[in-house]
Length: 168
Ligand code: SF4
Ligand code: SF4
Image (spheres, rainbow, N blue to C red):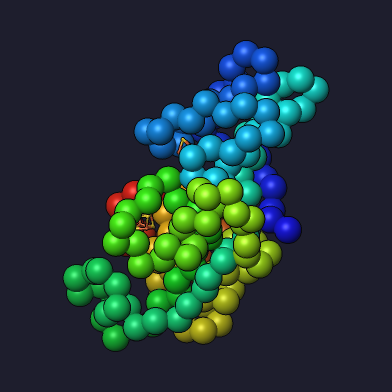
C-alpha cells in the first residue's frame, strides 16, 4: 500500500481536473488518474481535484556506499554515504540503471516501498556514520515533498545531494 500525501506545485483546473507543475510535462490529470511519472495522483475532494504524491515517506531503496561511488569530485573523501530513493520518474531513459524502480509506476504498476519519515532516514544515516545523503534513485524531482521539512533533513554533518539532473 503506497503512501498518499498532499503534493506540492500544482493548480486546480475545471471539473476536478488538476495540472501538475512539478516538471515540464505539466500533466493535466483527470480525477482518479495519475500523471506521466505514475506517482502523482488526482484525488477528487468534494468535486474539486487535489493532487497527491504516492511516494512521500515511502522509499523503495536504501543503501550504504563509499562516497567515491557517486559522481562527485573530491567530496568528503573516504566517507560513507546513505543513498535512498523512491519509485517513479518523469523520464524513461533507455540507459536507466534503476529501471526496476523508475519505470513500473509509469506503466501503471503499483508503487512499492516501505514507510520511513524523513527524520527516520536522517537518523539511519547518522547512526551508520554516513556524512552525506544523496538521492540518486530514481528521480529526486518526483519526491520533492520530502524537502518541505529542511531543518530536520539538514542534520548536523549530513549533506543532501543529488546525482541525478532530472527528477511529494
Ligand atoms: S511530476 Fe509527474 S505528474 Fe507532475 S508534471 Fe511531471 S510527469 Fe507529470
Ligand atoms: S532520469 Fe534517471 S532515473 Fe529517470 S529514467 Fe532517466 S536515468 Fe532513470
